[in-house]
Image 1: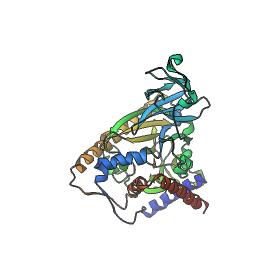
Image 2: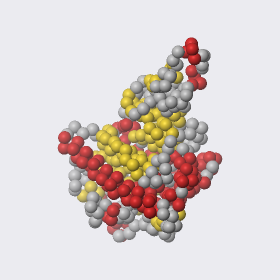
Image 3: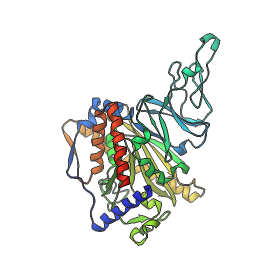
Image 4: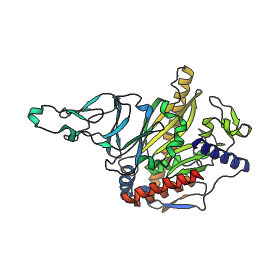
Length: 411
């Protein structure tokens, strides 16, 4: 059913391309400039979105085998993600249950974690294994001192968790069926080629760029080229969106050759043609396909707010369908990843920082999203909706959204 949906979306892109049209929203929409600069608003977004909604913590291939782990700070919360003995992924609060000191740093492979403060030791499934000098410390029930677990789900080669141990929001419900679409990438069996973390502007300023093809031939004229497409159609699953340019042509896997999809039976359309464009996962993930030296790859961008309203940081994961065994493919992937740093860090985020500094003057009251920028409109509408919702309403929003998606799929 999900492949059929991909084919329908691709056909709509072809139809728009042949008609010389694109999908437009009903009107131009304004967003208060203070939404980007107000510290109180920023604190509310951090609490109501990043500390309450499921977040994509890692691609599965970052933790490829039992014992793998990584420690990361997410919106001010120390998080430890492990691949447990049974192969499942689990996220924990990276905080010793004795005094709160983080039990792990960086990444690696370990069956246990020992706190560097007093020596309490935990298994990688979170269970407290031992405390130092137990006779001196006193009797404790170890079962009551396990690492605190976060609700965790691994699906479509991606690992999600909600950074609220008491959250009742089902992660699968939150994904609105989008995980089924993402499963067609096949990330479960991909290889993590490289990764890096780069600083950025306000998190919404940064995220706006992932939902916008309008700027491509202008801001990126020296990298992508001035003839690059600037139109996008948008497809939504709740707050999660895919944007793709109306076109009947796609790049043939592993070459510069263009394929005309109208000359091929839809049943024979290659999967990478069905997945073209940018796939965003609210509130902080962007996925886009690329080719380095002929090897099929994708960049997964993981965006988090920084410590202040004008800061963010993005970890870029370059994943590949196959681990390169050929020097040419390996060099091509390196070149592709370096090119993408230029595009994002030197062009998108540098521009975003200048934009934020300008907005901080307080002299611009509104920023605008055109009828051709539907993704940005929808994104900001969801931000407003979710920070205004209490926990009970949050559950209802996504339960209702899941039902709507099921009814649509059944039609």
